[in-house]
Image (cartoon, rainbow, N blue to C red):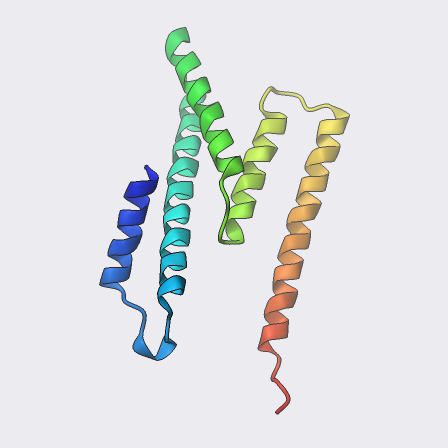
Length: 143
């Protein structure tokens, strides 16, 4: 999916599902939402294609076709890892790609296993911080 296609889908979504009038959204906020939504659509399309390629890589294919699949898989991993993420959950998709990169070629070394452990600890920290922030917002405010 191209950036232009993603932006068109985001604009169409906003047209079909307008912001309720009581929320008072500015034009800049609307454009930022459209851009974030387009980034999300593009990111999800790349991630879905990457997952499909991983599944097809497990199947036997001719060498020339296999080489093309590997090239596209590497290209998608680069796109996913370098894409800016407007939503927190997208970080976990990126970490899944990093995890795969580390273990892609079979047995992981001790240092690679340590890196995976560190990534999993970072994921847990992000989740914990997210839950703490949600609890803070849920607390009643003093008048």
